[in-house]
Length: 89
Image 1 (cartoon, helix red, strand yellow):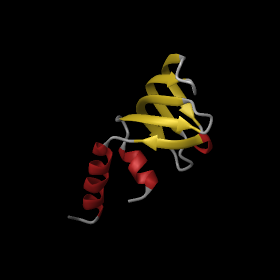
Image 2 (tube, rainbow, N blue to C red):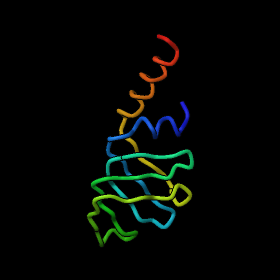
Image 3 (cartoon, rainbow, N blue to C red):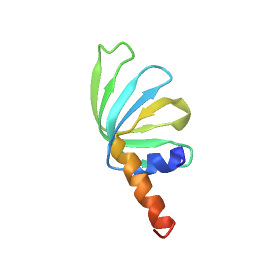
Image 4 (cartoon, rainbow, N blue to C red):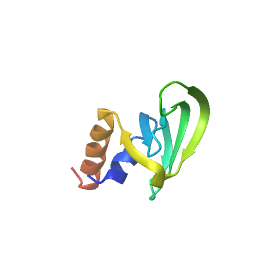
């Protein structure tokens, strides 16, 4: 299971993204590319200190600025199902 396949399987699922700057974004994954650039919808952005919040309809996050991602466990299940389909099982 590759990280990119796990991320792509998370489309439409809630996702938390923390940037290297400490800012966090919580939203639903719309799309991602091979550089792990991410498009989110229905986003809540939280400042590094956690004292400011912004609600955004959409946002684009450059993959090179991402520190880590938190995905729901459902994403793992989706990847396993897709791998079974590719293996013909």
